Image (tube, rainbow, N blue to C red; front, side, top):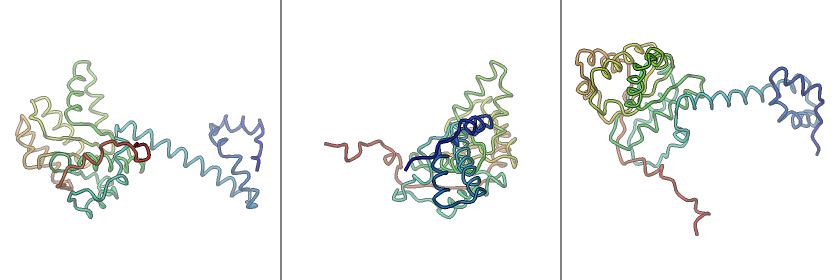
Length: 255
């Protein structure tokens, strides 16, 4: 069956309206409309719905790229046979993103390799699909960026980026001992986002150990109390999950 030809005038009009991507599916939609004797209104709704879906998909892709999320770490890709223990009820609640609506935080805590980063990024992907702005950074890299920003007077701009997103993911939080500048920066982030923006942290240390990593105990106590009093605690334990992410040759490609 041949597809319906699209007139040059229609192509020009769609391009002027910035709807030229509709041309990719329009011939097939014309055929479908003719086969089903579709009313004009239904055809119009169908082709516009295609465009809405395409734009939403592009928007999600852009938000994921800007967020620096690992594209492979999605909740639907989590291996349920992994030998780790995690509160599934709490994880399902977090996946609903109600914590984001109330500007609550999440602390994902557990030993090395059990999938903390995976779940943090997976929640970030869900947030991107729901239209939220997300930024995921390793904590030490973020602090280095802020230090360098002081040298070229871009510190305020960098800090605003961290405060403006709906969800900030801080991976490997409280691993290293912080110097005074790093302590102040984390204090600013934790206090300024208190009840106005959500944070997910992953850490090998429990919240009771975070205080010792800050250079200034007074600032640390203030910031950590704010965070923990408004945070869900997702504890993960078990065997390392990283082996399940190891690349392998597909069975049909082996000889």
